[in-house]
Length: 81
Image 1 (cartoon, rainbow, N blue to C red):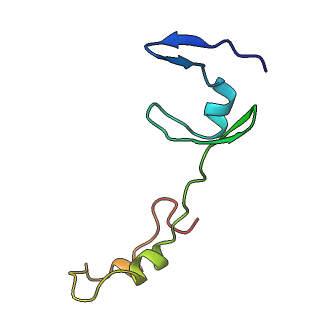
Image 2: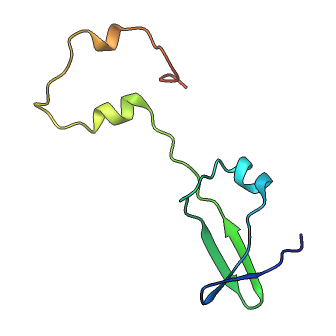
């Protein structure tokens, strides 16, 4: 894919193709990793972490208030995903 560089202040900028943005769920302000090797530059979108409720709860410090019966409530979203 050919891109045209444009001047913006003292830098040169190029656009990120919409298909890359959509595939990687990027938004304004997202950070990407640039890999430079000689004349080659690649752009990598970092993977999003996947959390499981059980893992997050296991990391909670003891003594924090907990709602009684929450663990028996039915899932209402993607908690089990």
